Length: 231
Image (cartoon, rainbow, N blue to C red; front, side, top):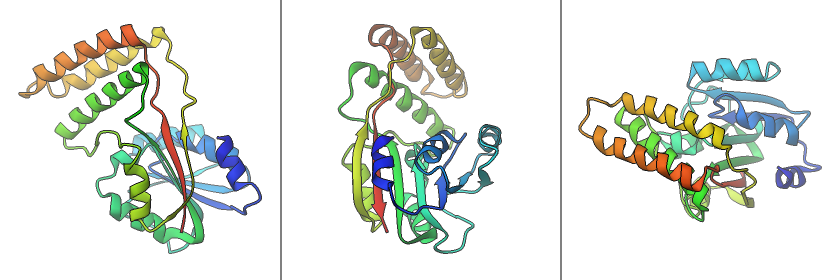
Protein backbone atom coordinates (compact mmCIF):
# COMPACT_ATOMS: atom_id res chain seq x y z
CA UNK A 1 0.00 0.00 0.00
CA UNK A 2 1.66 3.18 -1.20
CA UNK A 3 -0.08 5.31 1.42
CA UNK A 4 1.45 3.23 4.22
CA UNK A 5 4.88 3.24 2.59
CA UNK A 6 4.77 7.02 2.20
CA UNK A 7 3.53 7.55 5.76
CA UNK A 8 6.24 5.42 7.36
CA UNK A 9 9.08 6.65 5.16
CA UNK A 10 11.95 7.76 7.38
CA UNK A 11 10.36 6.33 10.55
CA UNK A 12 12.36 3.75 12.50
CA UNK A 13 10.34 0.54 12.76
CA UNK A 14 12.27 -2.55 13.79
CA UNK A 15 9.70 -4.80 15.47
CA UNK A 16 6.09 -5.50 14.43
CA UNK A 17 3.25 -7.62 15.84
CA UNK A 18 0.43 -8.75 13.52
CA UNK A 19 -2.63 -9.78 15.56
CA UNK A 20 -5.13 -12.21 14.03
CA UNK A 21 -2.58 -12.96 11.36
CA UNK A 22 -4.45 -16.01 10.00
CA UNK A 23 -2.48 -17.49 7.12
CA UNK A 24 -0.30 -14.38 6.98
CA UNK A 25 -2.10 -12.37 4.29
CA UNK A 26 -1.18 -8.99 5.79
CA UNK A 27 2.40 -10.09 6.42
CA UNK A 28 3.09 -9.55 2.71
CA UNK A 29 2.05 -5.90 3.07
CA UNK A 30 4.11 -5.47 6.24
CA UNK A 31 7.22 -6.94 4.62
CA UNK A 32 6.86 -4.53 1.70
CA UNK A 33 6.34 -1.47 3.92
CA UNK A 34 8.93 -2.49 6.55
CA UNK A 35 11.50 -4.67 4.72
CA UNK A 36 14.03 -4.57 7.59
CA UNK A 37 11.65 -5.13 10.51
CA UNK A 38 11.29 -8.30 12.59
CA UNK A 39 7.69 -9.48 12.32
CA UNK A 40 5.72 -11.66 14.75
CA UNK A 41 2.26 -12.97 13.87
CA UNK A 42 -0.26 -14.36 16.36
CA UNK A 43 -3.55 -16.19 15.84
CA UNK A 44 -5.68 -18.61 17.89
CA UNK A 45 -6.04 -21.15 15.05
CA UNK A 46 -3.23 -23.70 14.73
CA UNK A 47 -4.24 -24.70 11.19
CA UNK A 48 -3.94 -21.12 9.95
CA UNK A 49 -0.58 -20.67 11.65
CA UNK A 50 0.82 -23.80 10.03
CA UNK A 51 0.01 -22.38 6.60
CA UNK A 52 1.44 -18.99 7.60
CA UNK A 53 4.70 -20.67 8.63
CA UNK A 54 4.94 -22.37 5.23
CA UNK A 55 4.27 -19.08 3.44
CA UNK A 56 6.68 -16.97 5.53
CA UNK A 57 9.40 -19.11 7.17
CA UNK A 58 11.33 -15.97 8.21
CA UNK A 59 8.43 -14.66 10.34
CA UNK A 60 7.79 -15.67 13.97
CA UNK A 61 4.31 -17.13 14.48
CA UNK A 62 2.71 -17.98 17.81
CA UNK A 63 -0.68 -19.27 18.92
CA UNK A 64 -2.56 -16.76 21.08
CA UNK A 65 -5.62 -14.54 21.11
CA UNK A 66 -5.73 -10.77 20.73
CA UNK A 67 -7.38 -10.47 24.15
CA UNK A 68 -4.43 -12.10 25.92
CA UNK A 69 -1.04 -11.34 24.38
CA UNK A 70 1.87 -13.15 26.01
CA UNK A 71 4.36 -10.30 25.62
CA UNK A 72 5.84 -7.80 28.04
CA UNK A 73 4.74 -4.17 27.94
CA UNK A 74 6.07 -1.85 25.22
CA UNK A 75 7.63 -4.49 22.97
CA UNK A 76 6.60 -3.43 19.47
CA UNK A 77 6.94 -0.25 17.41
CA UNK A 78 3.96 -1.24 15.23
CA UNK A 79 0.99 -3.48 16.05
CA UNK A 80 -1.34 -4.38 13.17
CA UNK A 81 -4.68 -6.12 12.89
CA UNK A 82 -5.98 -6.90 9.41
CA UNK A 83 -9.38 -8.37 8.51
CA UNK A 84 -9.73 -9.71 12.05
CA UNK A 85 -11.56 -6.92 13.86
CA UNK A 86 -14.92 -8.56 13.14
CA UNK A 87 -13.64 -11.82 14.68
CA UNK A 88 -12.69 -10.36 18.08
CA UNK A 89 -14.97 -11.56 20.91
CA UNK A 90 -13.98 -8.57 23.07
CA UNK A 91 -12.78 -5.60 21.00
CA UNK A 92 -12.00 -3.36 23.98
CA UNK A 93 -9.95 -6.05 25.71
CA UNK A 94 -8.01 -6.79 22.53
CA UNK A 95 -7.23 -3.12 21.88
CA UNK A 96 -6.17 -2.70 25.50
CA UNK A 97 -3.72 -5.58 25.07
CA UNK A 98 -2.45 -4.34 21.70
CA UNK A 99 -1.93 -0.89 23.17
CA UNK A 100 -0.14 -2.39 26.19
CA UNK A 101 2.49 -4.17 24.08
CA UNK A 102 2.96 -1.10 21.86
CA UNK A 103 5.93 1.12 22.63
CA UNK A 104 5.30 4.72 23.71
CA UNK A 105 4.66 6.79 20.58
CA UNK A 106 4.23 3.54 18.62
CA UNK A 107 1.69 3.02 15.82
CA UNK A 108 -1.27 0.72 15.38
CA UNK A 109 -2.41 -0.24 11.88
CA UNK A 110 -6.01 -1.38 11.37
CA UNK A 111 -7.08 -2.81 8.00
CA UNK A 112 -10.75 -3.80 7.95
CA UNK A 113 -13.46 -4.31 5.32
CA UNK A 114 -16.39 -1.89 5.32
CA UNK A 115 -20.05 -2.48 4.56
CA UNK A 116 -21.22 0.73 2.92
CA UNK A 117 -20.58 2.58 -0.33
CA UNK A 118 -20.26 -0.65 -2.30
CA UNK A 119 -20.76 -1.31 -5.98
CA UNK A 120 -23.10 -4.19 -7.01
CA UNK A 121 -20.27 -6.77 -7.23
CA UNK A 122 -19.00 -5.74 -3.79
CA UNK A 123 -22.52 -6.07 -2.41
CA UNK A 124 -22.30 -9.71 -3.47
CA UNK A 125 -19.15 -10.07 -1.37
CA UNK A 126 -20.99 -8.52 1.59
CA UNK A 127 -23.79 -11.03 1.07
CA UNK A 128 -21.28 -13.89 1.23
CA UNK A 129 -19.62 -12.48 4.35
CA UNK A 130 -22.90 -12.02 6.19
CA UNK A 131 -24.05 -15.52 5.16
CA UNK A 132 -20.90 -17.09 6.59
CA UNK A 133 -20.89 -14.94 9.71
CA UNK A 134 -24.49 -15.91 10.47
CA UNK A 135 -23.65 -19.61 10.30
CA UNK A 136 -20.47 -19.17 12.34
CA UNK A 137 -22.44 -17.49 15.11
CA UNK A 138 -24.94 -20.35 15.05
CA UNK A 139 -21.99 -22.70 15.55
CA UNK A 140 -20.79 -20.71 18.57
CA UNK A 141 -17.98 -18.81 16.84
CA UNK A 142 -17.58 -15.06 17.15
CA UNK A 143 -18.01 -13.60 13.66
CA UNK A 144 -19.92 -10.35 13.36
CA UNK A 145 -21.13 -8.60 10.22
CA UNK A 146 -18.93 -5.96 8.58
CA UNK A 147 -18.46 -2.57 10.25
CA UNK A 148 -19.65 0.71 8.78
CA UNK A 149 -17.19 3.42 7.76
CA UNK A 150 -18.01 5.37 10.92
CA UNK A 151 -17.64 2.48 13.36
CA UNK A 152 -14.00 1.68 12.66
CA UNK A 153 -12.55 5.14 13.48
CA UNK A 154 -14.80 5.22 16.57
CA UNK A 155 -13.15 2.01 17.81
CA UNK A 156 -9.71 3.59 17.37
CA UNK A 157 -10.75 6.71 19.28
CA UNK A 158 -12.31 4.59 22.02
CA UNK A 159 -8.98 2.82 22.44
CA UNK A 160 -7.32 6.17 23.17
CA UNK A 161 -5.31 6.32 19.95
CA UNK A 162 -4.76 9.42 17.84
CA UNK A 163 -5.57 8.82 14.16
CA UNK A 164 -2.71 10.04 11.97
CA UNK A 165 -3.66 8.39 8.66
CA UNK A 166 -6.97 7.14 7.29
CA UNK A 167 -7.88 6.02 3.78
CA UNK A 168 -10.04 3.59 1.83
CA UNK A 169 -8.22 0.86 -0.09
CA UNK A 170 -10.50 0.02 -3.02
CA UNK A 171 -7.94 -1.47 -5.39
CA UNK A 172 -9.49 -4.94 -5.54
CA UNK A 173 -10.25 -6.40 -8.96
CA UNK A 174 -13.45 -8.29 -9.90
CA UNK A 175 -13.27 -12.04 -9.45
CA UNK A 176 -13.09 -14.36 -12.45
CA UNK A 177 -16.37 -16.09 -13.35
CA UNK A 178 -14.39 -19.34 -13.20
CA UNK A 179 -14.29 -18.92 -9.40
CA UNK A 180 -18.02 -18.39 -8.89
CA UNK A 181 -18.79 -22.11 -8.62
CA UNK A 182 -15.96 -22.54 -6.10
CA UNK A 183 -17.39 -19.80 -3.87
CA UNK A 184 -20.89 -21.26 -4.07
CA UNK A 185 -19.52 -24.71 -3.27
CA UNK A 186 -17.79 -23.47 -0.12
CA UNK A 187 -21.02 -21.81 0.99
CA UNK A 188 -22.88 -25.07 0.41
CA UNK A 189 -20.35 -26.87 2.60
CA UNK A 190 -20.80 -24.25 5.31
CA UNK A 191 -24.59 -24.53 5.08
CA UNK A 192 -24.44 -28.29 5.63
CA UNK A 193 -23.04 -27.66 9.12
CA UNK A 194 -26.42 -26.35 10.29
CA UNK A 195 -28.66 -28.67 8.27
CA UNK A 196 -30.58 -29.87 11.32
CA UNK A 197 -31.47 -26.37 12.56
CA UNK A 198 -34.70 -24.42 12.16
CA UNK A 199 -32.88 -21.71 10.17
CA UNK A 200 -31.59 -24.07 7.50
CA UNK A 201 -34.33 -23.35 4.96
CA UNK A 202 -33.96 -19.58 5.36
CA UNK A 203 -30.22 -19.73 4.77
CA UNK A 204 -30.69 -22.19 1.91
CA UNK A 205 -32.88 -19.57 0.22
CA UNK A 206 -30.20 -16.93 0.85
CA UNK A 207 -27.68 -19.17 -0.89
CA UNK A 208 -29.97 -19.47 -3.91
CA UNK A 209 -30.24 -15.68 -4.02
CA UNK A 210 -26.44 -15.40 -3.75
CA UNK A 211 -25.98 -17.83 -6.65
CA UNK A 212 -28.28 -15.71 -8.80
CA UNK A 213 -26.63 -12.43 -7.75
CA UNK A 214 -23.07 -13.57 -8.41
CA UNK A 215 -24.02 -14.57 -11.96
CA UNK A 216 -25.80 -11.25 -12.56
CA UNK A 217 -23.48 -8.80 -10.73
CA UNK A 218 -20.16 -10.61 -10.49
CA UNK A 219 -17.98 -10.67 -7.39
CA UNK A 220 -15.48 -8.12 -6.12
CA UNK A 221 -13.89 -7.89 -2.65
CA UNK A 222 -15.30 -5.06 -0.54
CA UNK A 223 -13.14 -1.96 0.06
CA UNK A 224 -11.10 -1.79 3.24
CA UNK A 225 -10.57 1.05 5.60
CA UNK A 226 -6.95 1.50 6.67
CA UNK A 227 -6.17 3.53 9.77
CA UNK A 228 -2.88 4.31 11.48
CA UNK A 229 -3.31 5.32 15.11
CA UNK A 230 -0.59 6.70 17.38
CA UNK A 231 -0.24 5.71 21.03
